[in-house]
Length: 215
Image 1 (cartoon, rainbow, N blue to C red):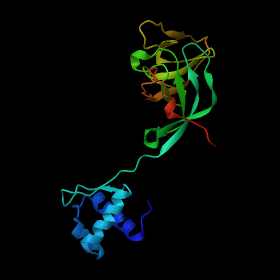
Image 2 (spheres, rainbow, N blue to C red):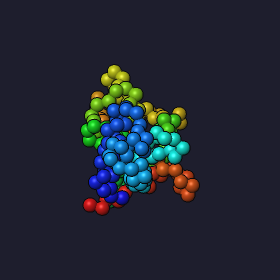
Image 3 (cartoon, rainbow, N blue to C red):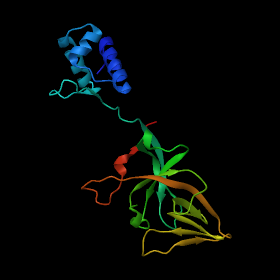
Image 4 (cartoon, rainbow, N blue to C red):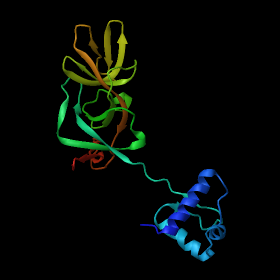
């Protein structure tokens, strides 16, 4: 819904008042500020409510609240699927995961779909989407995307003396070790995890969070 000039002015004034922490005005007081009747101001406030910019409690004289706008979404490329001890498997076509902008870290990020059960004790399940912050270093205990001799894996990282331990979060699996002779690199650290819940999809695949590229 598009606001007219007066409605926009009223909204701007309300925003200014509320952001300053000043007392919330009544409808009559707002009308006096703009030189219009209480009835006319009430009509303008209803328009702001219809536009989902404010909410009011009809049982209170001073109950105007601003509605926080939804955070802008950022499209993060889904680069592939990752499973223990396998090369990174690219997706069939370019897809994206939409994430609120305020949940995206600084720097370069990408997404991967998890395959397998190697991290289930950390709550990372088969079919989950992990958001990865691209970096080549990590602290002990962080969950990383690591490549050992061209095989990619998602594991907890530990630097122990002259070797690297990549620890699964699954008591039935053994860690992966990388020695100085191995080709080893970190391709990022897990920043966030997204999962879709749906009765018809008990595997927990987060495909609804993905969006085919339309560019």
